[in-house]
Amino acid sequence: MALGGEFDNIIFNTDNYKHCHYPLYPPGTEYVSSYIESRGGDYPVTMFMGLQAFIREYLMHPITLEDIDYAEQAVREQGMHFNRENWLGILNDHGGYLPVEIEAVAEGTVLPSRNVLVQLINTDPKYYWATSFFETALLRAVWYPTTIGTISWLAKQIIRTALERTSDNTHLLRHMLHDYGARGVSSQQSAALGGMAHLVNFSQSDTTPGIIAAKKFYNAVSPSNSGPNSEHAGFTAWGREHEVDALRNMLNVYRDNGVALLLTDTYDHENCVKNILGGELREEIRNWPGMVGARPDSGDPVQVTADTTEWLMDAFGYETNSKGFKLLPPFIRVVQGDGVTFDSLRRIYIELERRGLAADNAIFGMGGGLLQHCNRDTMNFGQKANAVQVNGQWRDIAKSPTGAGFKVSKAGRLALVKVDGEFKTVPRDSVSAEENLLKPVFRNGQLLKKWDFAEIIANSESEVPEQYYADVVAPMLAATRAGALAGAVS
Image (cartoon, rainbow, N blue to C red; front, side):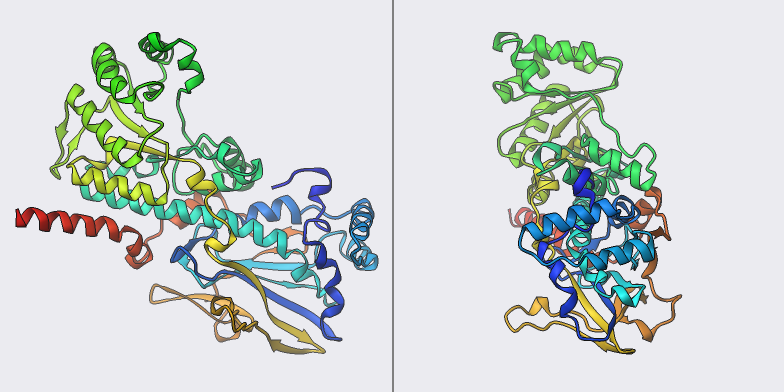
């Protein structure tokens, strides 16, 4: 995502030392190939996302003479070598566009880690160095939205599992996890890319930059829903003695909107749920034309979610669904957006099921746990050169450090195939172009494939083997088995 001005200059959007790398290749180097993969890490799969946004924002805008002049001054000011002729050549020979071709797996695809996602190569032998020059920007553009998309996709499998086990309303899946992460990330650019990746899996967000990015770069149509929510500033302004008036005011103001999320922890959460929502406002909520959300914003999210659900059931009743789990009336739900992380979400569902409460009693939001609690090492992302052509001869190349086995890279030009439902990374010349799932998406300033957001969603929702997420949902299944055994013993 662009910051504008000098920040958009691809010559400067790199590690400074990249400017000294071009003479370090062997004499006669003509082509350099490199690839990007997740080398494992915290999650067994990746949901690929974000490349098109980077291509459209940076690679489809040519460099200018002014860009070269600015970069030369800034780079040399830092004591780094700068080859002006390289960049004047790109300006004059290629109209300012980087002479590279990028191929990639379809965005939204979910596949096991340690498979090639992106592969690129220079298209003009004069500019062999271009392939690796913009690694910094390209890798950053891929690892972050792909990591967020993966976290969100795996959270979706947790929610799907909970709904399938305890709810009759599995169709609600895409509405169950809201993005509250805009204030918890390091920049607006992170909010845009991460928020956009989350919307592939869920249709709920208050992260406006992510909504804009999905529309701008992927032609998304109405990618998100939201509704009236509250904050403590507005409620505390009424004073503690008028908490009920503050809550009633919100119900009155947003009566025609169909939803109102009421903060319940402004002072005493338990008192608010039991005596205000379930007492003074009980009939108003029961007759309110839409859904009221009781929103605790502090405390242990596991216990608070389950306790709040039961307190609301004491006040408003419940029904028992076809799977034998209790469900609140449709006009009231718990909305838990505080302290929700990948791990706590799973534990919340375990506790709800343990108490016999249906998963759809609560709707969730994630903030920093969704968009910020990760880095490049979370999924061990890397971009590495895998082949070079020198004096007309191709060489397969790779790194193989003794101190970090996961950093051993793949040698040779690569292809991605799917055999008997399994993704595999194989040598490029071992399969036909039709079999190769890496398809050209960019060449010499032109976008060759434009992904639509609806296509990406469809890709992400394609059926995958259960092994892709088995380890993630295993604690939920184990807890259920342990509870069943305990019940049998008693």
